[in-house]
Amino acid sequence: MAKRLKNYIGGEWVESRASVYTPVINPATCETLGECPDSTREDVDMAVRAAQEAFPEWRATPVMNRAQYMYRLKTLLEDRFEDLSEMVVKENGKTRDEARGEVRRGIESVDFAVSVPVLMRNDGLEDLASGIDEDTVRQPAGVFAAITPFNFPAMVPLWFLPTAITCGNTFILKPSPQTPISMDILFEIMEDLDLPEGVVNLVQGGKEASMAIMEHPGVRGVSFVGSTPVAKLVYETCTRNGKRVQAQGGAKNYIAVLPDADMTASVKNIMGAAYGCAGQRCLAAAVVVGVGDAYDKMRDELVKQASALRVGYGLEETTQMGTVISAAAKERIERMIAQGVQEGAQVALDGRSASVNGFEQGNFVGPTILENVTPDNIVAREEIFGPVLSLMKADSFEEAVEIINSSRYGNAASIFTNNGKYAREFKYSVNAGNIGINIGVAAPSASFPFGGQKESFFGDLHGQGMDSIDFYTEKKIVIERWI
Ligand code: NAD
Image (cartoon, rainbow, N blue to C red; front, side, top):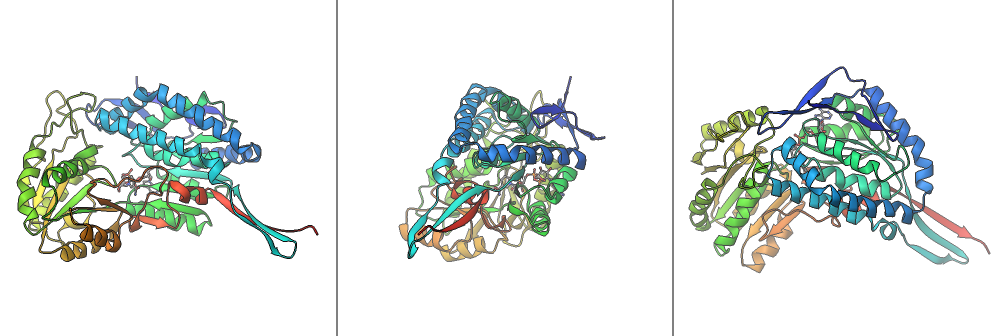
């Protein structure tokens, strides 16, 4: 029977006060995996109170002791690595290898949190004036929350929770209601940590729970990852309510391929970047701009390799690309392809009639390639968030950069070339937060901030890396005179 999910508040599993539960559907098999409560303001209030109560004792727990929990969390996550990865496949639809990669990346964020005792140290200056010393200390700031998306149900919450609590804050997580079970498992795993009650709290739900978090006076700051319209709303709501906020939004990532690039390596990279996780990655390659005769060199090879991708259920080891998240997503993706064609794109490979034996009800969209796409076409402008790659031509490197910089998004951009001058010029002048040079998916590791510019990010301090230490701590300046 499908599991009715509970919230985890103050160290206990508690039933939500929700009157509405939404089914969590395996997008490949259409099996109902669980029921997710649409948690209410009262549920959120209960979680905030628990986190507030836990804060004074937790912030006074020595930072070295807080870091010890992260060593244990890493071991527990390694023990449950396969369970967690399997649930990511079941509720999200990606392949097993992709899910394993995601959980591995999540564990790397736990590794990063172990370094908080070093990273929270700060600087000072003796004898600033005669007998006067000045120091900066970083202190935890209170209750933080994260609101996270469906596409990385295990990794994205782990970008935030480990660092936030190791810095001495208490925490509330609200995952996507489309993929809430991975976090149900994470909290089950974290029960074995024996953290003090209320340090970590899980509230399952959707918009109502998000709004309640953003409007609650007891929440100091919010980390958000999701689509651009919601990221904007989150940024506006949190700032209006006097909160710190980092809101990572949607994307439209471009790749420029120059004629001197190693075509075999470039195409292999672009394939992974475009079709990994069925294109449902904020770092997915969405548009490839072929410069000069690079276009013709790569076009046929991309079509050939994309046609050969084995689409199927992620739990089957032979599957190379899984499903998209829902019937609604499939419908949206197919509608955008049709509109792109209406606006002048030509279909080089059509994934719209994809069907997988044994999973006929599954939300499969096959790899799709649209060519002769112009910058004003919807498929060049809007995030599709599916396995659709648009191909564009540019006569020069400069034209390619101009096309890329005309996008309203700025999450990631990559270039494939063997020319150092163009590579340097690309990283110098392209307005995107994560730049790849001969790398298809420019995903920063846990110790670097996750970039994002323009409509891909709202806020000042990004997730991960030193930015996350700044985000989760308050700097206090102490000026002393004793003589
Ligand atoms: P989404 O914006 O629909 O939802 C994200 C979260 O916000 C969920 O927890 C959801 O319950 C909540 N939410 C949705 N609508 C809301 C509303 N009106 N008010 C308050 N809360 C609301 O995003 P999604 O479909 O789950 O995820 C896909 C999107 O996330 C894509 O646009 C992708 O590019 C983006 N994404 C960005 C990054 C990044 O680092 N920039 C990483 C992963 C995903």
